[in-house]
Image 1 (tube, rainbow, N blue to C red):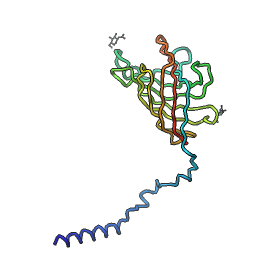
Image 2 (tube, rainbow, N blue to C red; image 1 turned 45 degrees about the vertical axis):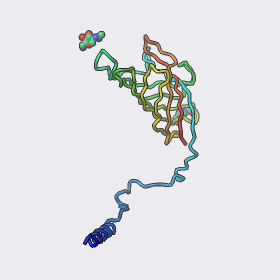
Image 3 (cartoon, rainbow, N blue to C red; image 1 turned 180 degrees about the vertical axis):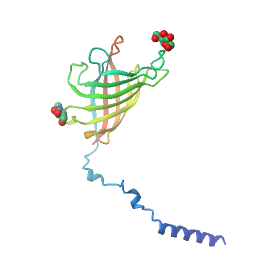
Image 4 (cartoon, rainbow, N blue to C red; image 1 turned 30 degrees about the horizontal axis):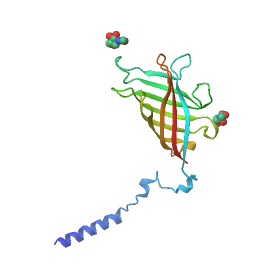
Amino acid sequence: MAKLTFQIFTISILLFLIAFPATGEEEHMFGKSINRKSMTLKKEKLSHFRFFWHDVLSGSKPTSMMVIPPPKNTSSFGQMNMIDNALTLGPKLSSKIVGRAQGFYASASQNDVGLMMVMNFAFIEGKYNGSTFTILGRNLVFEKVREMAIIGGSGLFRFARGYVQASTHSWDFKTGDATVQYDAYVLHY
Ligand SMILES: *[C@@H]1O[C@H](CO)[C@@H](O)[C@H](O)[C@H]1NC(C)=O
Ligand SMILES: *[C@@H]1O[C@H](CO)[C@@H](O)[C@H](O)[C@H]1NC(C)=O
């Protein structure tokens, strides 16, 4: 009896598979696997970049502005700044600009000075002109070195992944202006 039940079960499954083939071609028309070679991807490489990030809050042309004030005046938690900060080759703001850090950071830690950083690094120099990569990470600003993820990119940084290490070069506690050294390690094609 058990054997017959099993046979009926098996046959039912077979009939089901014939009636409803698993390919479901029409359902998946919007996505299909393609050959990597058709993308003419080169060999994946690892690049290191070093530049300085300038958070300018003061003066007549700030590039970092508070867009959401902290809801409580007892801590900065909840504050958000929008940025269009210069990325320069040297620590001086007057040195060569290679790109801009565009995005925002928000105070996301109640017990530390900890920021959530969301930035596109948009390059304007040489072969990287027009290419971007995206940084998302946790920034405990009083730590010597903060590590954040590179989660993707465009142009020469398509399929990018990696990390940055940020360390404060200078900070003016009166104005809040800061210069931070960024070392980026990026895997890309
Ligand atoms: C902080 O906020 C409280 C309540 O809104 C207010 O009474 C106090 O004056 C504020 N303190 C400062 C330093 O702004
Ligand atoms: C970068 O690209 C833009 C737009 O294509 C162009 O106007 C600009 O001159 C380029 N800059 C450099 C340094 O090549």
